[in-house]
Length: 334
Image (cartoon, rainbow, N blue to C red):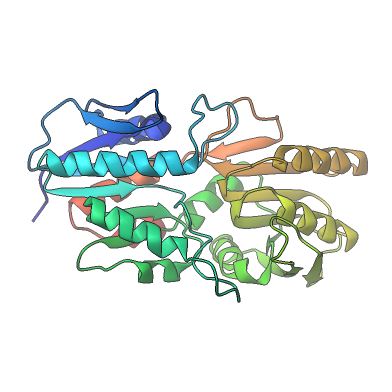
């Protein structure tokens, strides 16, 4: 039995994303808005009836290049909580959060240090207590994140897009002869791309000092890459230190054309400078270089070596499937 009619709400940081998803679903956004007060507090106001509806609230944890919103990721998290709370107070039957890049997804463990929190679990509890019945996220950093959620109260629904993203790259000539991850931990993601596209795979081992954030000490290539074209895939590209180190290590081992593909292209400073430097070094060597991301994070006015895969059609299928109580994995990766 289908659930009640779908209603889509958007926090301001994800209005473009939600509008595109609504278009694929043949509907429109429910009128609502973020309101920020001069003191820095905020609220989310819904301007239409959603009583008894199956509500989907869209928010981005990270905004990209050229974004007019100067609110922090934590501001946007709190605004998301306001929106979920508003929907619950408006008597929605269910409220589902759609946040492609899940805030705190890299903080799912303490990495040997005992005097720090586990923010993934903290945020899961906050979203659940606000009234969310489900959280939909794209390619979570670790599938074990679902363990932070209590399924009787709030279900964590991961969406896997390697097949759709890989097909898009292949159509544009961006899928290399080999797929690589930036480190051994990301090898599973690279394997999903390579298996779907029937390409080879190469492993990279990254040595990192976790006392120094966003730095990579050394990268070792495991496999033969000489005279091959390689697509490096990663779920999150933040400062691009790992991706740049991986590309340089591959070139040192004789690889040629390089494509860096990130599911969530956050590209915080100094990512653009690092990637631009890599593009210049590729040009001098006579190699092709490109960076691709998804519309999980949108970068307005990005350099010509950057391209973006739109995920809105996939998310629309997921929303439709959840509403109809169908298979999410079935609509994304068969």
